[in-house]
Amino acid sequence: MATVPADVQGPSDAELIESVRGGTIDAYGQLYERHVSAAYNLARQLARSQAEADDLVSEAFAKVLDTLRAGRGPDSAFRAYLLTALRHTAYDKTRREKKVDLTEDSERRRAGGG
Image 1 (cartoon, rainbow, N blue to C red):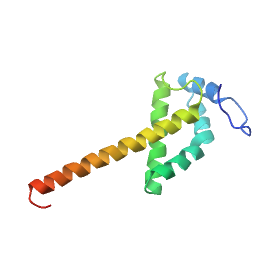
Image 2 (image 1 turned 90 degrees about the horizontal axis):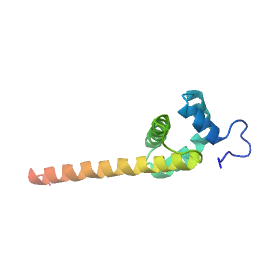
Image 3 (image 1 turned 45 degrees about the vertical axis):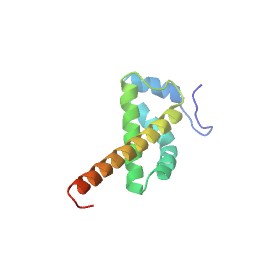
């Protein structure tokens, strides 16, 4: 079943997800408002700066929107799906940064600078 905090009025997350898939972007705004604070709480734990946390939250919400528009993603449990997407976004960013660091280190060594 869809998870909606007790103090939230209006449609359930599942209903909003269905509306987004039907092309109602305003429904995604409601999902955003409902879950953005939870996303920021996690992003601050995973990021090294507030700017990086902002980027992670934005990218995770954008990815989930694209997924829903394509007819994929959750039918309910939006928050769990969003937080998982955010975690994956953070991990992917970390992997890319490590790969760049390793490449730069090996290039420096070959050039005799390290």
